[in-house]
Image 1 (cartoon, rainbow, N blue to C red):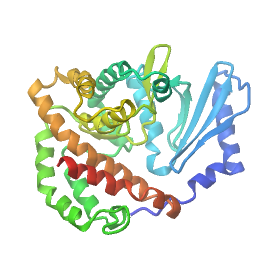
Image 2: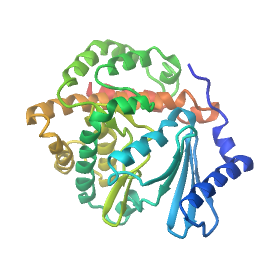
Image 3: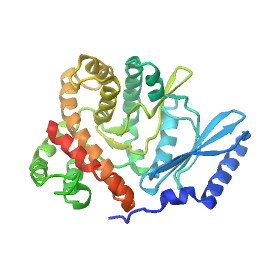
Length: 332
């Protein structure tokens, strides 16, 4: 197991590191004949990333640095910008080795738009575009895996699940905000069923890029175009697992019940995009399975995060892995 990365946020606040990053920003913008017109501000610092806001004579530009466990985000963002330029952030430059990105301003955050006026139409437009991105990217799975994107394809997800259950640290069995021993037994007992579900998913709708944290804070709107950013949690898995976070986010924002007609209509706008690769029956059956497995994927994502956190931040996030596994048990 990797040693915790305890110093990354501290490094990002150090004057020397900031100077190094700003020098890189200046060089890359100078190469693009773009002038910086004001102060470069560090507007975001969390354990896994930091961001700078850069005013230029061509508009606002953003710099993002990611921590080592999610360093592949720079490469994935660059690849997606090549394959689906209309649907993701405009990458002006990248240092894939460092995990650094220079991005054009993507516009208004959907979360801020919805705070002004809640309108489900936005999601009914975003999700079909996202589905088309997933379908178009399915043929690039070998390249995505080569870039370091976590592998949670149907053929390996059950193994990843079983391996997670062997890790005592993230599960916190019998501890505060951890799994109860009874729930741990239930999770282990579900290993054969998870394998069956994965086998049922395989071979119909292809595995592809899966954002795994698709909510209104990751979607932006500018000049009528929606763009999806922040691919640091992305994996290669069944596409429908993306709806785990997306639908929970929508239900929360719009105060909808999980079985509400409005939420179902939003989901249908997404699922309908897959009718040329699967029958309606196959789509319904696949979604019924993926809505369960998507919660396992979220647990795996958080496990990969907490393994690398320092002690204080790990305490803050200690309930995330057990929480997602408990949510899985609710639908298993």
